[in-house]
Image (tube, rainbow, N blue to C red; front, side):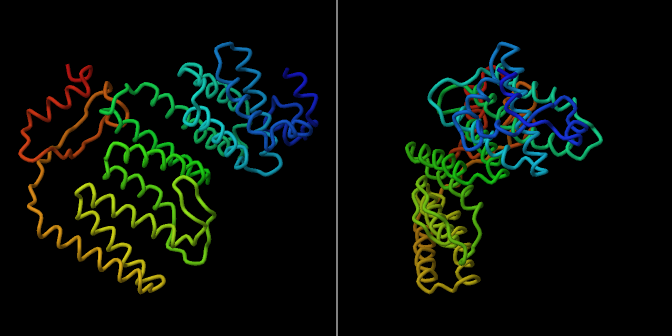
Length: 345
C-alpha cells in the first residue's frame, strides 16, 4: 500500500531531504487522495490507531508525508492540523460507531513522534512541527481520559472538564463550527437535567469566543440556532440566554452581573436605546427578586484532592464546594466518598 502511495508523489527537493531525511516522494497525485476528502482522512487516522504494528507504521508514514507536503508548500501545518483535528473529533466525540481503545489510540501518537525524531533537530521546522503534533494529540489524550470516566450523572463534571479541554483545542485551530456543536451539546445536556446554572456556564464558553463587533457579520448557526447576524448581535443574544438561565437556576446575582456587562456593551459600542431599556428593566426585576426572596446562604467547604489516584480534573487542585444550606462537613465527606470510593478508602 505504501509503495503505491509513494509512486503517486513527486520527488522531494534537496531541502526537503535535508530537513525530513526519510522522506522520498510526497505531494503530487497524493494530494488528490486527501485534499477535501474527509472520508479518506478519517479512515487513514483510524488505520493509524490499530493493534497491528505494520498497519500503524504505514498509516503514520502516509500521515507524515501529508505533514511534509504542507510544510514544504506553506511553511506551516495549519491546513493539515485542521483536517486531523476535524477527523479525530468526529472519531471520538461525534460518532456512534467504532472508535479505538486507549492503547490503540496511543499507537498513532507514538508512531508520529518516532518519525518526528528522524528530522533535522536544528531546522526551524522541528520545533514548529512538534508544537503542531502536541496540539493534535492533545485531543487523543483527552478522549482517552474521557473513556476512563465511569458512567453516571455524578461524573458529569469530569466529562465537562474534558469537553472544555477539547473546546480549547478547537479554538486554537480556528474551527468555530465544531466548537459551537460541542458547546451546544453541553448546553442541551444541562437543560435536559434542569441544570440551568451549568447551561449558562456552557454558553459563557461560546460567548467568550465573540467580540462586541458591530461591523463583522456571522453566518447562520444551526447548533445552537442563530440567524445570520452581526458579531455584536450574536454575543448579545448569548448574554440574554446566559442571564435567563442564571435566573432560572436561582443565581440572581450572576444574572445581574451578566446584565451589567451587557449594559456596558450597549453604552460603549452602539448606544442601543432598546437594549439599554431591556437591561434596566431586567435589572429592576432581578433586584426586586433579590429583595423579596428569603435567601438562605449555602455552606461552603474547601476540598483538596491530593494524590495521583484522583482523576486529572481534580488531582492536585483545591476547590471551594457549595453545599446545601446548613450542611455539615460529615455530609460533604460522605458525598465525596460515594463519588470517589477507590480513592478515599
